[in-house]
Length: 418
Length: 219
Image (cartoon, rainbow over all chains, first blue to last red; front, side, top):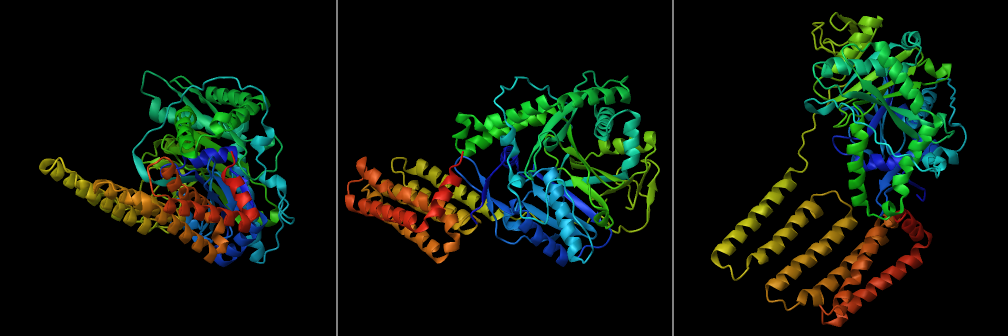
């Protein structure tokens, strides 16, 4: 057990800010066509952790920064018994920063965000499903743009790409305007509502407006938030949606660790604003913000605060306090909600055959109590909202609008049994 | 079986519409997608809080009685030390799931503080600084060393605690040099023992130790 990794830039942040009401734990799940066999799943998990060792880690305390070390304990698969995205309890997971859960036909993996991001997580679950199906005796093959499952793990898989792409350019100072924030009656559990629909039909709808699914859905969300929360007031705040961007597409990288940026898009809506207006505004902003120069800037920004000499030698507890303060007052205040789009998961035909659909759940936080995530496989697009407030008004309006105006056939299901 | 909610215009297998909670079917729920969750009773921490409350109760009551009756003689210090120590003993050493290494260190620190308070309250003949604290540190270092020797696999986990113990081992000598303490030999013996432990750590751990220091102090 000599292997150790520094936490990557985003990993340090998530580790610092996670607490009971902000678990920093997200879930990616595959719903299979058959009931899950726990024994085979356990064998598959053992294989995956051998192939992708950077996931088999635990957190250790350091003087200036905490870090990850190899974890030689066994990670057991467990039947689902807790609400999604519960905080990671090292006693429950044998120190691991992920848990593998099954319920009926679903295999879910929940990750502490310090370990990986959505892209890394989907690689992990793809590998897990591959091994699982192999142990079931199915004839399947694996394909991935990032990893070659049949060879040893490569050094690139554990790159800290933020460090690799940081430049000396001085970041331009600008302060992001704050956004309207969703409030509601707090509840203790994470309630999730999934809406399953045709990926192709949503794609066609977006195309009709000359835009992408991400922009289309974000615009609809802004409209739903306006309709439910901001319609009757004199002062119209901007409603902004935070959209995580996979940096691997612009800055080539094979890393399975965190490598994403976040851009906020949105506008102030009024009674006369049409959905077309929101779409075009969001599309323009998004296009502008995902320009390479702008993302480069955000990488520099992120790396800067942790490499500043003064910041380096501040003892950890003080540092964490500062990070938490920064997170609350800058990062969380500039958005109403996060909507992440993992996109269409590419799997070989032989594997897709056994899969019904996939789910992605982003943890809600105190200041961002409803968060959304979408993921597609084949023609099944699943849009999931998780919330820690009682009110489902925005989610309800959003789905009703999709069904009413755009005539989409949506199957909705939830963990809210009543 | 799919149901249709005519209000929300969506389909669902659940007997209630997940969006508007409208009843769609008389059927019982099948729990196709999510289980019925176990409701974990939040018992954790109750005992600790109770002990903490009792400690506050005892200390404040004694303080009040002391101040009202004999404000010139602060006998409540005799209560304060042992109660605080008892608090740590129960809440940390016994009830918490903290690492054994950290429990040992907390014990050393708490015992030292308690004995020092008792010493100070009983006329300050400095027996705690002169004799007890140095030997306490030595004993604790020996204890951690023994744990490590018995479980060499866990050696890495204890490096941080061992280092802390070694640093604590030099504390009595510092107290002597700053003329707080006037009896040299127990302090000196403790420092020597700490030094020997340190040398042993370096000699027998070889690469592990260097690697561990690099990790822990990376910035």
